[in-house]
Length: 81
Image (spheres, rainbow, N blue to C red):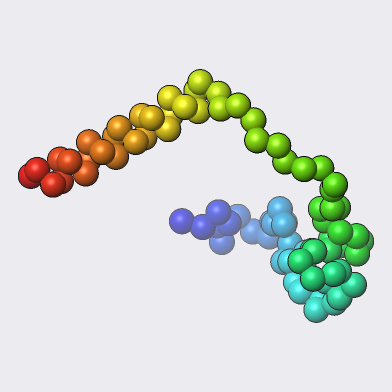
């Protein structure tokens, strides 16, 4: 079940545990709502771009309509039976 078998001997893990240890001050100089990366810089710099709504694609519309139809079919089958 484990990815690392005991019989393989000493192997290096792809991501050592030391990379995930919390030193407690990683986010000390980050403003609230902003996460800091290892260099102390903001992981996602704020952008001034506004998100504009777009036109739905045909594939998206068909996918939603099929989902609604399937859901209604299941609900009516449960109610009828």
